[in-house]
Amino acid sequence: MRASDRAYAALRSDIVEWRLPPGSVLAEVEQSERLGVSRTPLREALARLTAEGLTAAQRGRGVVVSNISLADVRELFELRAALECRAAELACERGDRDVFRQLHQELVGASGLLNEADPSRAAYYELVGRLDAAIDAAVDNSYLAQALRNLRVHLVRVRRLSQDNPARLLEAAKEHATIAAAIAKGNAGVASAATTVHLDNSLDHLLSTNTP
Image 1 (cartoon, rainbow, N blue to C red):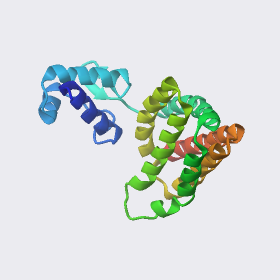
Image 2: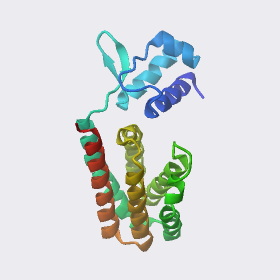
Image 3: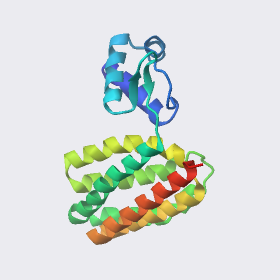
Image 4: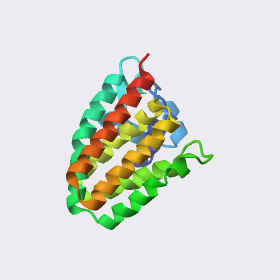
């Protein structure tokens, strides 16, 4: 792996997981030493992150981790609705129904994953990630799949704003199960509607959690 790719992957992970929270200054000397790369590949990595909207250049401060505002959240969910509803419809037409039947069964039992001691809820998020990946594969459209992957990078950051409310996560698991069931049955209208309900509920929760 090239040094710039290594630096990019490390910084991207740190930003998405909030180890580098919004507003963090990414000083070249400090980050070069921390990541074990020279300043040229670091600059290449920072340029890629800026192109993705994860970092931004600020006068007098250099490159900083981008902030996330409620306006940003609303815009992300507008894009998410357009992409994910269409993806759910296409997955109904093109997907392997057995794959989604299995995912539905696992999502129905997701409450057990959320009741486990792991505060990161890694097993639950891994299951949701598999549903996303299955939809991407079923869509069989590289441009749509790439757009969804780029969007999800920002959504992982936004997740922190929801404060991982246990009651909301249980409801979200049921909503994901409904989406998987609709795709397994090949019902595009229900899959799209279920996706809309999930996104509306998720946005409402985010806004209510972060509005004074």
